[in-house]
Length: 284
Length: 284
Image 1 (spheres, helix red, strand yellow):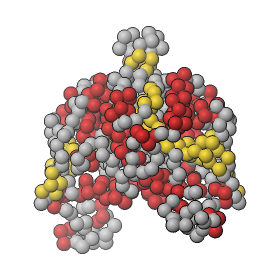
Image 2 (image 1 turned 30 degrees about the vertical axis):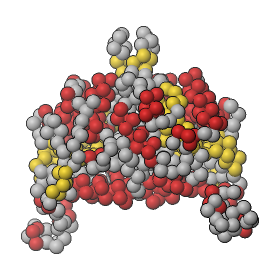
Image 3 (image 1 turned 120 degrees about the vertical axis):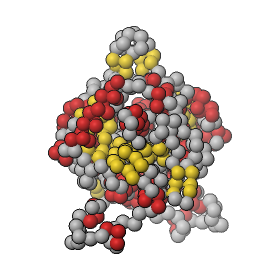
Image 4 (image 1 turned 90 degrees about the vertical axis):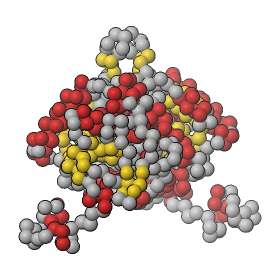
């Protein structure tokens, strides 16, 4: 039973196929079956949403899942570059064909539809949200275990549209150690709690830099506070990640799929546990 | 002669006061005289626009100028926290009264209008741009030498509105060493070039971290490339800034006005030179 049926008097006895209230699926949607949609969000820009989204996609792919990434940051898209995708998105009668990374991750981003990756997309909210909606309705995602959504900064148009229109199963929150970042991330957490999806937990990115010469852990954005911050917002703490120059370099080279991070592997396990428990709402 | 007069047939012989085409000024605008409006932008989130805006405001204040900061990042406002402002914005018959920092910088931000600093602002584009416009038209800025605008990430609603509706004199671009960031910043540069304001130059933030133990300069986001990037976009390079834990801590404590940075002092001088030369358009 779809969510829209739950308030219908005939629920349970109807024939969904012939129901006039049932949402009309596009050709692309009929050709797709996405099992779980997870949004990666922070509210704040530059804390590493795109890195976390990409690492999570790679981690799930390595575990044998079929994965897609929907880059909903229309005016500042990072995903294609991180995965080194030069191919443009294609089109067929059935919908938009998303390019695939070397490892087999399906990717859709505005930067796969424009000629030069650094051409600006100067669009106002209604058009931007239309693009995001189309990435959901018109892309032939096919059979996917996980579709990850890389969210833009802010709690404006795109975030509102995604939580109102897309069937998000849960949200991963990303922050950095600055109190300033945490303040903005709390805005995002409060926003999500106005909608249905549970928040699986909080990841603290850029927690420290390790000096390659003397191994000192330098807390560049101040003392890590992710665990306390998660507690404050009654969220599971999924783990902390260092600020790693290797990740920056591999991302710039489009080789995120070659990146190894024991810290992230642990975070992915913690997240899988939260998803499996399915008890996310007890934290809300 | 105002900009709107330049295309008028009666330009030069008219009485602006009685001209029906002349923009209607609000009470707050009549009570204000802002000499220069500078936008600090990057397109990318988290590269330090708010830090640079704040450091620039402090630097100008120290030089004896009267300075204001308009925080146009409505859904992710950082400025009040960086300056430690707890006071709310006031209202009078003449308009909105902006709080003042300890050092005397006038500040307007959405976070000065809501009860809790971490309450989300869940607004779509049209309302967000209306707020930004009101921060320009309805705040009693008074006599200012410089009004700095801290821009949100992206080239969407707020950026479009600011370049279409506010009398921006010039733009300061901020980037970080990642090729990924530079790609997005180039989008912003191309966007600005669709409008009138010149770009004064490019600042590379977070260029390196200095290890407090062994003094090694760690290039956490990869090799600094600000100078090459500025050249590529035919922009003056204003300088590079380290990722400084002291700045992060002072920003979290609301004490940006206590921060000293010889690197930034030099950048401020370079910027002043660009503004003074008034030859910004030769780079476009």
